[in-house]
Length: 92
Image 1 (cartoon, rainbow, N blue to C red):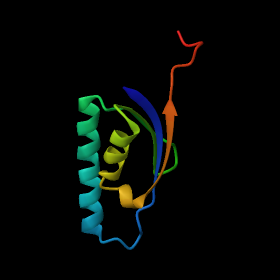
Image 2 (image 1 turned 90 degrees about the vertical axis):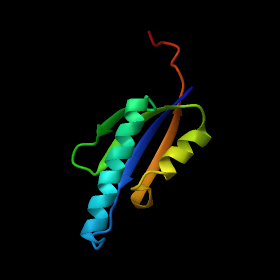
Image 3 (image 1 turned 120 degrees about the horizontal axis):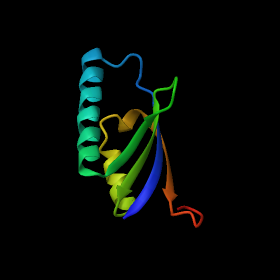
């Protein structure tokens, strides 16, 4: 398994149809909670004052993470930064 730190900044267009927005956000929540229950989306933290989050994913590969991220309903409205993680030698 591989851990990845992912920052997601969301910018939904203000002129997006309200029903489309509501549906997209609901699908995003359901998908992310499914991945959390499965243990793939290990952590999700809101960045205070922003429509952004910091998340940690536990996946088999960068390819798997790419598939997960591009399947996010909000993906078209996101700027995403991915950092692969490895265990620090001083960690307990």
